[in-house]
Structures are given as structure tokens and as C-alpha cells.
Image (cartoon, rainbow, N blue to C red):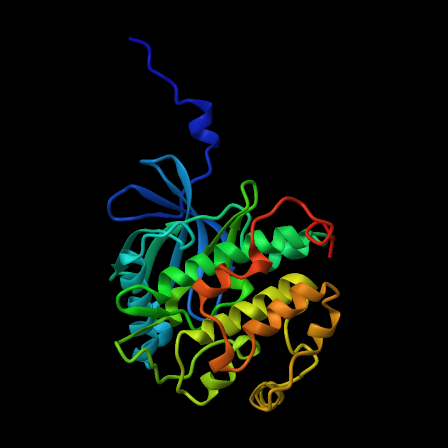
Length: 297
């Protein structure tokens, strides 16, 4: 019988750099993102025929800091238990002993993170910001009402992801999340300075720190400017935040209702609404197009 030559598509197919132990997931060399703790590569789920994000941590980098490794395992354990349409889904995870890496597979959001997406689309309506905000708050409401309560602690536009074709927004990167007990009070300092609530610096806070961070995210979405970009050091940011000085970017928000809503979110802890309360705020009410909603910012 004549031999069967390999299909040209097999010869041209982009090879995987590595495959997970089950043989289901493959990793490509394309880097989707990199942070202080992990790198994220483009991956593929051969069983379901879909793109995925292959998150990889080289553990040898952190052999002297077990707290970081502990934090990563906390992220994985958390992701496994969370089932919400506005939270990134975890498919699989394992430790590669030979290469001393921790790998976990999560869903891929086609359009990347919200910061980069907003930069690509410089003109959006207030209505669009409201749609994104409702979804972020729905995710936070789920986390905060989870038993036990989960505080993200590092919410910013680089770890909120979007599928732009359908406008679906999802919260990811729960590596700094804290599960708190019945007291709803956590004691630990971690996060991104520009987005950290003043009480976080005092290491005595509740889940309302995430509302403050959400407010800063919305400010960035509205102005395409990272809060406190006028400061050239963390010390200066700290001084302004703890003194109650708002970022200069707030003055660039021209829509009065949007500005007032952001200011509610970044107000003092006792005056700051919960995610569930904000979802009921008239500003976020789903209504027919109005002149304000249609305003391009």
C-alpha cells in the first residue's frame, strides 16, 4: 500500500513549547503578559478546541520568599472554588517538579486587560463605562458575599480582563486576595499604591478597600490616566492618599454624575458604599440612551 504523506497543515502547524501532564493543554511561545510573580502565555485546550491562558511561575525565583509561593497557591485554591461569570475561570493546575515551575490554566479573554483595551479605544461613551462598571461590581459583590468573604486587595485595570466582541468583563489575578473571617477585618499590606485605599496603609481594613480601588479603576477608564501620575514616588502617593488628597485626574472628569459616582467610591471608609449598594445606584441604572449616556469621553 502507498504510504500516506503527512498533511501539509500538520507540517505548518505552530508547535507547542510544552504540554501539560494530561496532554490536554499546550503552550505556545507567545507571551501575553508578565508581572513580578508570573508570566502568562498563549495556550490551547485541545479537548475543547479553545484558546486558554497558560500562567507560569518559576519557583526558583522565590525560594527565599515562601510567602510569595504561599500567595500563589492561595490564588489557585481560590480560583478553584469561584463560579461567577465576572470572575476568571480556572481549568487546571500542576507543579512541574523537573523545571520547578507552577503552572495553571485559566480562560483567555480575547481582548486582554482593560487598561490596554481602553488605550486602543480612545473614545467610549459613559454608557460603555457603566456597562463595564456593573460587571466589575457584580464580580466584587460575589467575592465580598462569598463565605468566607474574599477581598481582592489589588484591583486595577491591568487585572480586569475583557472579551471585547461581547463586552464581557472579568476580574482576574487573585494572587493578593485575602480570605477574611467573620470579623471581616484583614491585617496585611499588599497592593498597587495608586489604587490602595488609605486604610490599607494602616493594615486595618475591610472589603471596602476594593470599592476604593474600583473607583480608581473607573477614574482611569474615564481619563486614560493612572491615578496620582503626578507623583514620582510611592512615598508621595502615600502622603497624598493618607492626607485625603484626591488624584489630579479627578478634575479631568467632565461628566458631573460620573465624577460624583467616582467620588462616592473613593470616599472615607464609613461613607463608602458596598458593591451591592453601588449596583443599585441610580447612576448605573440601565435605561434607554440619554444625552449623558451617549456622551463620548
